[in-house]
Length: 178
Image (cartoon, rainbow, N blue to C red; front, side):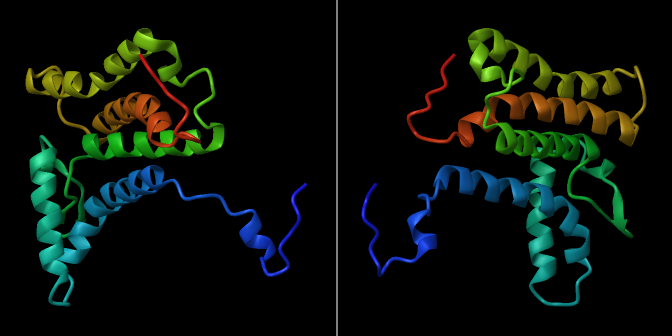
């Protein structure tokens, strides 16, 4: 047992160093999830800078989403910045972020621990997104928000199952390899 310094508060003795990789990954994820939802409301805001922020969000959405014109209409006539397929992917990433915080990437379903087989399973889950998009383009079914959200969610779960334990591992000594 180490002697306690009387000038040190009890809360500082238990403070752990900040994991900046995890912090920035969460910061980006919050921006990715909140931006498409906020864009329609920022676009109609009466304050001078907010519509320009909405334009930036819409610009990014137009470059990452294959069908931004299929976004939900949250504030007429403004749509979400991405379609529900892309937003479903973000919801899958949020779910995996929650599960990695809860289980620290140690559950059976974390694919990084299965090496190449886990990588292939993750890749197949991520390919559900483009498969659904091409099935829609080929005329196998029409665009439906519930269908595309589900396919995006599965892809987000696959992507998150592999990258979340990498981004949010406990220490730098935890090496995940194929």
